[in-house]
Image 1: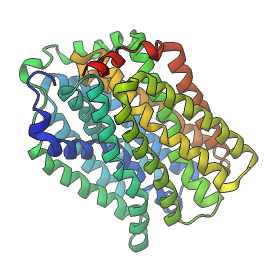
Image 2 (image 1 turned 90 degrees about the vertical axis):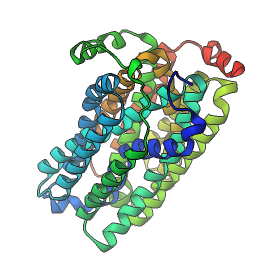
Image 3 (image 1 turned 90 degrees about the horizontal axis):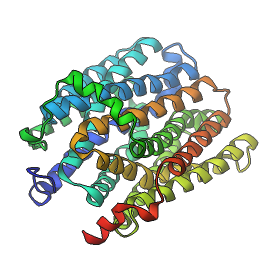
Image 4 (image 1 turned 60 degrees about the vertical axis):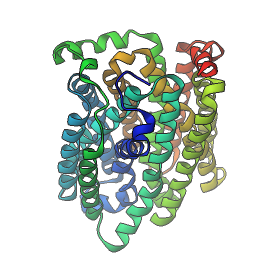
Length: 410
């Protein structure tokens, strides 16, 4: 437990619920409208590749804005920046709902993302305020499991909205989610005590990102998670067209198929939470990266040859997405452990790199779109290999992880 941070026993479920809502914004902002992508294309007078750039536009805003929210939160605390971010999210969601063309939609998606990322990056920093070492990794695994409900039900809820209303209603629903979350902040304690806040000017704080870029271990954690995120967003961007347009599954069935991967994420996060003490976070990160890379190679072969049809895509995709439970929580917790006194800035830094890779992944799928699953499979494979290479080149042998010692003594 860290200094004056509220105790786990005292705030327990309330803080867990609110942090889960905040961390879910990255998923729900995209997953809810995935089934609507094919229907949005004609309504906004755009092709599939252009509509897929609405995801890229979101990721650009999400990635860049994190670099600003982190130092702001280290200086002024967590709650105020989160509240300001939620207001931007609400405004951006309303703008998406009223968009008349693809360019306007992409711009409002960027605004929506600038607001949403404050919730996500600062929720991670709050975890570091409250916990450290293996306990932080376990808490992140728990949060990811709980917040996985959002992408689990997101496509299904989006498809249900499409049955009774237009795709615009999905974005109005996001406005409602933002308002509810904003109201919930009244019950969220400030986790960063005043005497622990940074006294540096924001200009100096921003300039110190250069120091983070020079740290080899931090880059290892950020790179492992970042490459994985690139593959995940390639999947998010390409799967609606691969499944709905190419394999002719219904939007409702697509929601079910998408949910299967989320169930895998929930399962592996639970496993990770139980094993992170005895096996160490770094070792589990290695395991997840290797499993994901192997699955992406099988996926690329299946996407190229058409072997196995829809099932040939779904099985390796399920394995790849499920590796989230071993990669994301451990890479974030490991990075935060490198510079614990600058949790906000570090969380922003690794988040920016992760979602910056997501920009590349989603943009490549959109630019290479040819009506087949091949671009999606190829892009995911490249990023999967990047993740495991990053782990091998930059991280020390997991058997020597200090976290293993911490886990034995905690």
